[in-house]
Image (cartoon, rainbow, N blue to C red):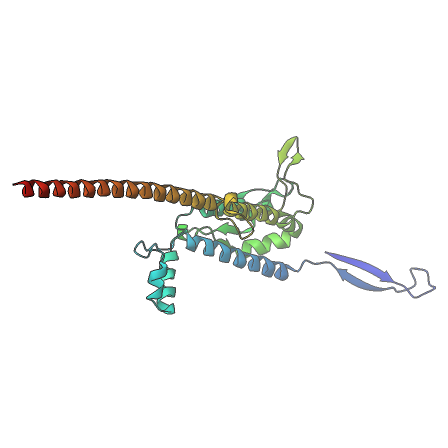
Amino acid sequence: QKATATILTAGQAPTSSKVAASVALSSTTNVDEMMTKIKEFVTTYNGLVKGLNDQTKESKYRDYAPLTAEQRKEMDEDEIKLWEEKAKSGLLRNDSLIREGLSNMRSLIYQSNPSIEDTRYNTLYSIGITTSKSYNDGGTLEIDEDKLRKALEENPDAVEQLFKNVDGKKDDVIDGKTVDTRGYLEKLRESMGALEVNIDKKAGRSTMTDAQYTIGKNLKDAETRIKTWQDKLKTIEERYWKQFTAMESAINKANQQSSLFMQGQ
């Protein structure tokens, strides 16, 4: 877009006999800068997805149980480190929380934004950003640079609104329908936050007590059951000792009686 402004000498009125100097003012979108920012975001996003996806696919080594205190005493630091790497590998294999979180993040790519009037650019996939066709990539993003550049050149405002809609609402009303008009980044932030909350509920964090998260509750329950079985085993042990003592007394008494019988002969 170009606008033309006329500059006149001070004190002069514009007349047909005067030649006015003019300057062209241009207003253009820095497409290259926006392309760079979007590609940087996609790179960061893909790194997160790959990291989470790799953890759900880690190999699990069932022969490497956690080391006991006695085992640690017999091993050097390098051996302990290698052993623990194997023991921890695969702890999140096929983890349902992470898989669900990745699925929710992936679905946002194909959600339209009803607040964008130009329907050609109201989804990420319509501007050239899609998930990888390979299932093994776990939902990483790919960019059709030609398609993205065309969208930025034709309607940069729509692309910006698609990513970050400052006026968007989670429960907006358009044409009598309740819709989500927030930008993709805000919806992605909410999805990632929900995943973090779910992880906290299951695995906890340093500020929580054991009673505030699932694994902590399971640990307390396991400790209670261990204590219950220890008490049961102690009771059984005491009963066996009483029976053994009674049996030993009976044998001694029988031996004494046998000895008296022999003397009487």
